[in-house]
Image 1 (cartoon, one colour):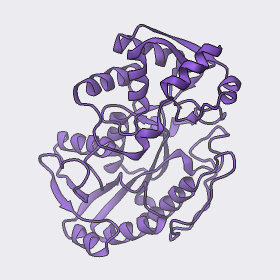
Image 2 (tube, helix red, strand yellow; image 1 turned 180 degrees about the vertical axis):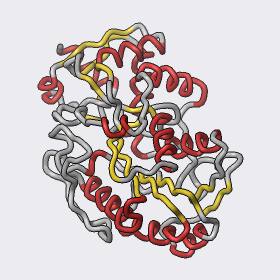
Image 3 (tube, one colour; image 1 turned 45 degrees about the vertical axis):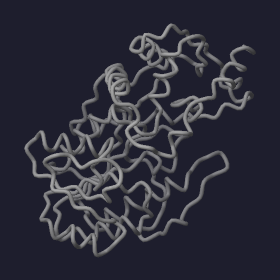
Image 4 (cartoon, one colour; image 1 turned 180 degrees about the horizontal axis):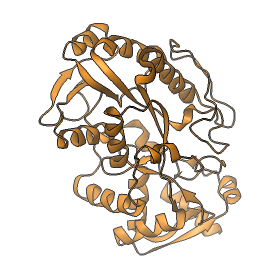
Length: 332
């Protein structure tokens, strides 16, 4: 479901490399279907289109990468329509489904947000401090929908932040471009903060493994080792050749200057649980994560060669304006 850009594209390419027969289902508007797939174009909110897709089965597994904007009832409708034609369902979800996100350390057994499988897009709310989020409620309902239909044949993958070649949100590309510009670079202290972004190719490989596996239930998909923010920025500088130096600013100072967490300085967030997500169950099931420095290297090579893959509204959210950064740096 999806299959033309970022995670979906990497999943398709990985499946084809394994010699699998691959059917993709999307609207045909964002990106090109890979050579070698059986492409079915349609709207997953349309029952007739879903029925037509089911007719292309049977499928050993459905891997759903395209439900992020769907309410739970939309996920429920797709799962119900495809259940007669599919043995397993691998659902790409998010760590935002947890009740304690992002304040608490999380494990696969942590309490989930409550949302009915047939909820519409109005269900849930976003808290005053930005958590929980309506998005988290909606994704929790989507998980419930898949589980109600597929039972023990449902696998729920819960990544935190996915980076790598083909990224359309712009988190890592922004840091790479900022590193290339050089000079004094505003950076969020502490420099020793460990972050856990996971490479898109490693998520894709794990999703494919689960498609032919026998496990069920939820897996946190985060980098088990991570990297310190200092090392992250050093790698960005090294790859881009930027002659720059991070200036580490206390979070209180950044907040006083109106710097928005998560977006203006991508990957920076002060909540205790953001980078404290245990992925040991996924590791035991075969998740293998390459060093994050390798993700940074390969993303820069892709970015320098190809540039932004698709236009996406979230791209504009990321990165502090140069004049705002300069003003803050001058005050430090």
